[in-house]
Image 1 (cartoon, protein in one colour):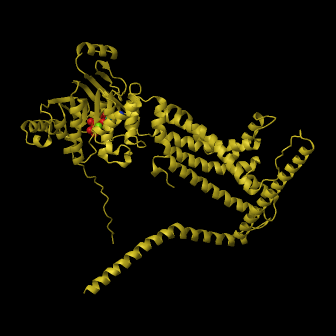
Image 2 (tube, chains in turn purple, green; image 1 turned 120 degrees about the horizontal axis):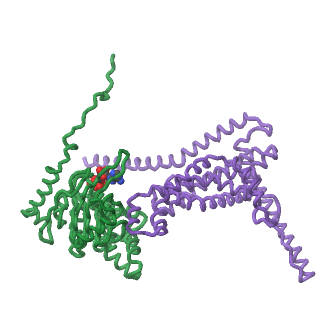
Image 3 (cartoon, chains in turn orange, blue; image 1 turned 60 degrees about the horizontal axis):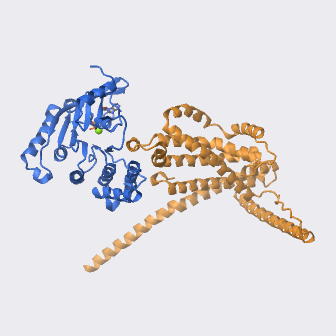
Length: 332
Length: 298
Ligand SMILES: Nc1ncnc2c1ncn2[C@@H]1O[C@H](COP(=O)(O)OP(=O)(O)OP(=O)(O)O)[C@@H](O)[C@H]1O
Ligand SMILES: [Mg+2]
């Protein structure tokens, strides 16, 4: 009799273990296995479809070709870095030698002007997009707060925002290009015109989601909280700092995430057309180049662009988690 | 008599100089799509310093409207409010409000919520150390000193309401306005909060106007119970003096004759004289075309 009960309890223990391990297993499946299966199937169909698409630059690149290009892009980067290193060493030697002959001689230091590698261009793109986004944020967030606080201003500006919001960067670009070349004249320009053009286009397109979300966030603050502020007779600045800003931080961040996504998309197009160094220009140059590797290299760039966009979004999300008091709003 | 606002005020000042808080012949008309909606008509009430007043009446009669006018959050259409013979026309910390749903700033801790008020009110008169002491004193008063550094989403509903009360008390208001402060709480917590409020009141002796739906709460806490008639055009129906000795204890009062008389007076007012006829007697008419489960014809 006692034997059977022991057996029974042992059974339940093993059952429980199985249940727990099943739970863990299903979590692993959801988090890892399913995405891997999805990606595998995608790669499979990609390689099949690629083989049957013939372009004037050869067959469409499959996964293999793209991986090969990744490694050759990396090799090119290493080679270029070595060249640069060698250039600087030579320059230093030359200057040292001249200085030995003539102590008054001040060595000329020139920067290496080799071509930008793929990885340099990624960094350039990240820099440009960040600048454009920051310019947009500096304009959009105060404007959005002001609009949220002032119903009349909101009614006045909202139609403009709604009309400009859906405009494609390609439409802005020619205008921005012409305006920049007309107004930005300087003998010793701090930044290149193409950089400025890309930056302004990115700002113009990523402005609107932030303006809209910020103004909605500010205008939908709980009226009880506003009453608290009124009863305390908080001065305007304190009111904004202590009540309005914290209350609308979740919405401001939602707008910033949307805007950063837009900015990254717009940047690639802007760099392509403005011929500003960066991933967009890389794609365009490869397209113009038209070698047999070009399509694979463009495809590699596409994957990198997507991956970076994803990482940027995640970074914004993490920032939101850090800054916002409302943890529930910072979800995917 | 047709007096302009300023003449009206003058008139009031001459005639009723004694009342500490004078709610004087207030009308409130809300603009609506179908013309004006007269929520309040001729509401008149004089309150002495240190008095605890309950406002009781059916839902929607206009209690919150009265309170918001005293707070300065609404402007009366006619008549006005005088606090120590000065007209009230904007909100201010001397008329602190405890809102129904606590309305603490969710991104600040209990301490910081009170601090915001204290900094604003006593910026010029208190040193940093004095402020800290004052904030802690007020939180202690509502028995919240153990959770000072928790944020509103980390404390219970009753605790939030206490912090809200501490914030209002910390402003050292001349009048404390409370809109159903315990409405959202369960019966036990509510009783507990009523006891704390009586304890605080015996210490500070504030002038208080409190809205409530709870007859026992009104009788237990108040010096006078102001019963309002049903809206629209709601006004003060009856005023009941509560002359029960303090300190009051809910247990011994339960058998008290005077307590039960007061209680039944309020109940009579609410459920006989001001019965909400339309809501109770008019049953919902069942529509003729009730969607029925489809019966197949075959
Ligand atoms: N801003 C407003 N605009 C139009 N009508 C309003 C407004 N505020 C209140 N009212 C109306 O005035 C009347 C009184 O409202 P009030 O909120 O003062 O009632 P109450 O007695 O506090 O009710 P409750 O006990 O449910 O809180 C209601 O009929 C309401 O519909
Ligand atoms: Mg109300």
